[in-house]
Structure formats: C-alpha cells, structure tokens
Length: 330
Image 1 (tube, rainbow, N blue to C red):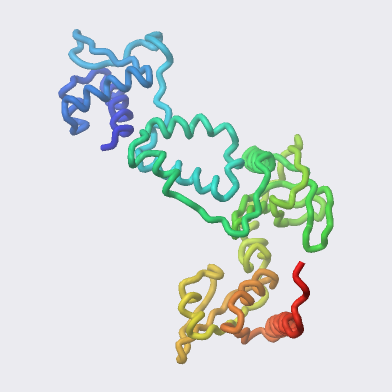
Image 2 (image 1 turned 135 degrees about the horizontal axis):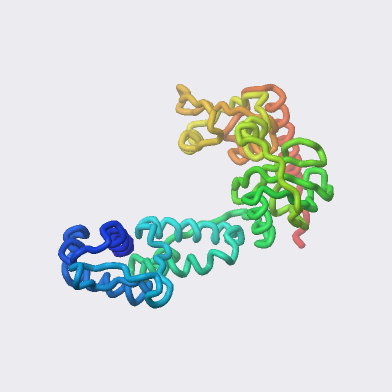
C-alpha cells in the first residue's frame, strides 16, 4: 500500500470505529511500527489532522471539529498511480498546446498532487521529464478561448464567436451551443449547434477570433444524435458516409498501413502479392485525399471512380509543376 493510500486508510479506520489502537492500525495497514508512527506524524503536521490518543478509550480518535486548524486530505482519494496518471495527462495537454483548457484554477491542485507524490526518482518531476508529446503541425489555441469553450461546455451556455471559415475564406459572427470538444490530428475542434444555420457544425478552435459567453442556455443535442450527424464519416469532415473508398497499397507501404487505423469501421485484406487492400467509409474527401497522397506512388484508388479521378487530376497537376525548371531561389 502506497503512502497516500495509507493516509486515507488511517482516516477511514478512525472515522469508522471511533477509536482504534495502534496495534489494530498496524495490522490493518500491514506496516512496521516506525512507518505507522511516521504516517501519524505526517497526518498531524502536514494536513492538520486532529488525531489524538484517548487513554480512556484506549486508541486514536479524531478530536472535536474545533481542534486546531482546518483538517482536510486534499487529493488523498487518489493512489500514487492515479496521481501519476493525472500528472501525465496534465503534461500531455501542456505539450499539445492546450494547457489553457485546464485554466489557472488547477494550478494549486497540481502543486498538491506533486507534494503528495514526492520529488524522488519516481515522483512528479520524473513524470514531467520523461513524458513528451511531439505535436507536429500543431495549431495552438489561445488559452482564453479554451477557458471560454470549457466553461460554456460544462455550464451548458451559448457562445458568440467570430469564426474564420478557411475553406471559403469568410469571417462571420456565430451563436453556437457547444456539444462536444474533439482533438484530432494536433488540432482542437468544437462540435456545436450553430443557431445561424440551424444545424450541427464543426468549428476549429484555432479559427476563433473572438468569443464571449452568452447568458442563454445552450440547446442540448443528444450525443447519439451528434454521433449520427457528425461522428461516422472520415476525419474531421465527418457527416454521414455515402461512399466507400477502396485503396490498394504495394507491399512496402502495406507493412505500415496494416498497423494503422484510418477509420473505426475500416475493412482490410491481404493481397496475394504482399500488398494490402483498405476500405474506408467517407462523406467528404479533403482529409481522405491528403492521407492517400502521402503514400505517393505506393497506393492506388480502385473505387469509386470519382475519387480515383480526383486523385489522378491532383497527381497530374503535381507532375506538371515539377515538369519544368524550378523557380529561382529567393
């Protein structure tokens, strides 16, 4: 049993029994006399625990509420492993450029968790040094927007945002009801009901230029409906799938693609020549086309014909660009 778990267990045993002897505590915790003595001292000194020995009752008790400073066990509901997990997740969010989502309010909690875990070789410092996320092509979000979106999402409030639709290069003001926050390929998105168009839409948080909370309750859409409308297509351009792409990879690329998940509903099969056939559903093609193009000459679109034609046109345009002399270097 870890140290933090013992602290909580001591508190629990005293509260449950009213009075408990040193020997009974030692047996319940399965620790040495010296360890239990140190734990009791730490509870008194570090957490102001009003633990006293009552000679009349022959055991340790919690004194009246008026005894000494306020008594609390912050974070002791977590085991050491759980604390490590929380600190690891915090570090991951920091490395993803999204620590602002947690807000300054969690700073004191993180400090408490670090103190409880200690600063030894296996403590919080080691977690921060040994966990690293390399966020390639990351699109950072301003912390204030994370905080506003998080507040609206949890408090079920509407948001007014100024949004840049990059596909149309258009900026406009929207009133939205947040439904779900999504992280996809090093970018953060908000699934929300847009009151301007009267439908569910996906908004990139890094494309928000202004945002403010509105004193109006958000329109609630069931997550099942959000999934049905937005969650089953390909990538962040989700929607309801209308087509299946059939892709064939040569043996070299197949060694990598077999281990990849392109879509939760994908289907795959090995080919006689060592290649691999992958089938994925999609509603819109932008992300799917980019994923196909990154494999270059090692993949062929077999179906549907319109997707094959789009990829062929893009590859032909790329070949034309490389057909002449390169432009002079600047």
